[in-house]
Figure 1 (spheres, helix red, strand yellow):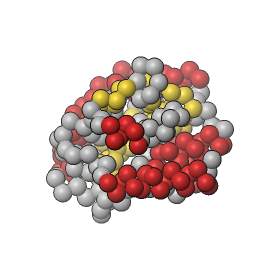
Figure 2 (tube, helix red, strand yellow):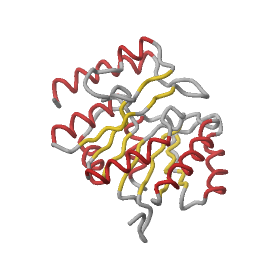
Figure 3 (cartoon, one colour):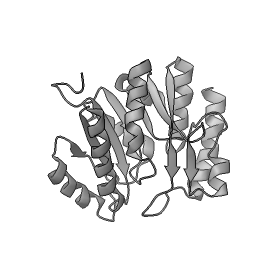
Figure 4 (tube, one colour):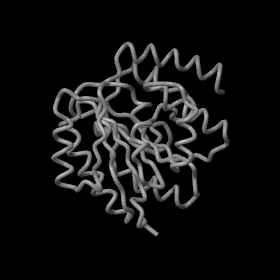
Length: 233
């Protein structure tokens, strides 16, 4: 049955940093696409002290959508993607957790298919993949395509649906930060034998704002790869 009396069926954790322009569109699209599924949901916005007024926009959206549906849980600074998910998990009431970006690179239109596939096969994890039939990457330069594609499925993707208990276990074991966090989650999931389904998605580079993938993130990514190969796989 869609939803439950104790809370929403799905918790969408949305880390933000300088997303004041993208956030309203993202939430409108989430509302539209989740309505099509018939399942209840909540969005937990984890904002890392954005200086552009993202939190002010989030508060306006709470008034529009309701405080039961949009929940703002800010932090004091830019502390990393992995810890943003950990923070958001503390407040999640759903049986399933959806992780996605707020910059519109992840279109919410793929969420219904992720939910359908999970229900059909009872997968532990559904991951959006840019590299299988029907998926793709739009707006990426050669550097990102070369460095951020491991060659084995889409390990760096951050558009995923998890059973809540599975995500909690993986988060408790993971030590990586930033972009490598997503890869470590998949390495550990496969090591545990958790079932993983894939939904092809189209990844579009952000509409507004600047990419957060700088030189330091690329260096951290390379170091993280070495860590995973020697300690997890």
